[in-house]
Image (cartoon, rainbow, N blue to C red; front, side, top):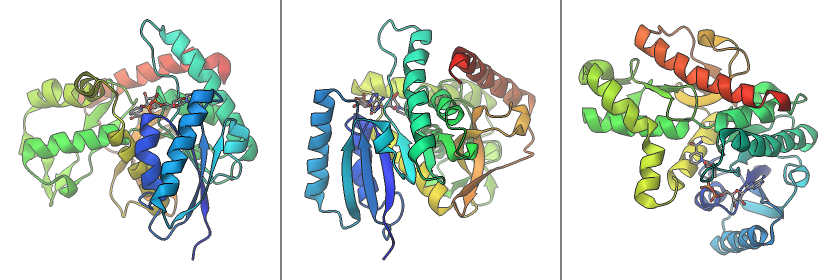
Length: 327
Ligand code: NAI
């Protein structure tokens, strides 16, 4: 049987952690033949550590055959030791009345420390997914804080936006979600993201032609996908957790095991594709194979799309400028 791999998860006692860990341990992320060791990080706070112990008791009570070990940590330097996969979920969400600068500086400190720890102690092939918001900029800070690791090992989660867009398109057209290919989401994980179905097909037919309604695209679809996070908070009283965990599983599974030629969306450091400045952590269409992702290149960008891409890029540039002193 396969040698266990090490999977670090931060914010492990939080809501997304609770929806995520059991699925990783059951083999849904890395395959039903891949044993895992969970290296769980929470803040040193006594309540958080106690809650983490409770989650670990429940993991134990599942008796997952693939769970080859688990550890509780309060320091990234031990939590990330030799880790092959790191899901950085814990962050400080924006509190009431919190200024953007304050949010960026608190998270700047977290992701600088975690990037440095990954640089020092993680596997040289570690695959890093940042979920904690602001996800793209946190991933950018972690990448910049880890000069000893390949920059392409750092990614941000746009997959929830991608999945939200898939479901909206399926509902509009009546085609099955699983039949839709070549949809993508460009840019920042924020309401400025640009969900793009111009290239999408279902069973060989163009989704754009099936919908044929630019008014719906601009005034219904894009605002619905962009504001979905806020709509969930409004309805549930809590932010998306199970769907976020599901997207994290999808992202890591496809990166590790391949997407079989299908497009998926990942936030990855630009190499200059589509005029996005190098290193900007940007949502792109990618295909994945043998543990590597490749950005889909040379897609035509029309005026409407360019305007949307410029807007989400500008937001990312502003966020990056806010953390420039850290990187
Ligand atoms: P939560 O507040 O329930 O849990 C976060 C956990 O992280 C807490 O237990 C906290 O103690 C821990 N934590 C905070 N700082 C930490 C640090 N430096 N090291 C280790 N652990 C730390 O939050 P929830 O609902 O689990 O969400 C987590 C993050 O994911 C939030 O920032 C949220 O905005 C973001 N998110 C991102 C999405 C995306 O699509 N990229 C979608 C949904 C949520």
